[in-house]
Amino acid sequence: MIYNEMVLKKLEFSKAHIDNSEKYNIDSEEWEYYYQLAHKQKLKNKITEFQYKILNKYLPTNKLLFVMKKIDSPRCNFCFLYTQTITHLFFECLSVKNLWQFLKEQLRQKLALEIDLTVKNILFGIPNEEQSDMINNINKIILQLKYFVFKQKLAESDISIQKATQYLFLNCKIKLFE
Image: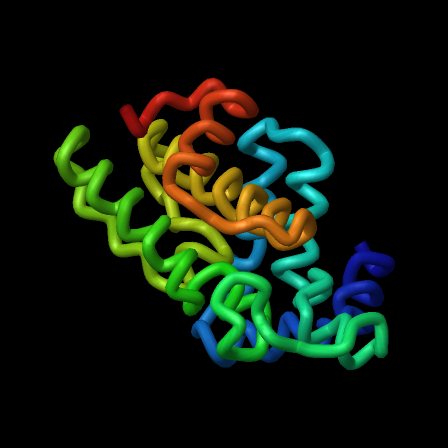
């Protein structure tokens, strides 16, 4: 008991954790949920690690790679207009926005679900207090689509709805988009 109290007193959060907490109004209970989300989805380790890098702002976006002097430009691989940050890569880029809009439309049309795909929900996950299987599945799709976007970035390939739906089916056996 004394040891646990000492550990808690010494516990320090990363700059990314503090920044995200303030920017997205995330409390410690929410953080616990977000850190466990990928594990609970029973996804491959590489996707769990990928999500952990997003949570800690350590995913190698072009902005980070440019600062590290690994590439010549911090511009986005898809739109070539803006600096590629984590937020831009997974939410702000027009190519990616189309993907999220398509997902939102499919959920509305096929499942009569109105899901608000905010930057917070996409980066961290949709809160699921009721432990709904539907929300768990949507979080799984969001994680997989983010991973697809990142793989396309690494391959220097474009993003299309057709490629995304093929990826979901081949890698996840998800047939949400027919």
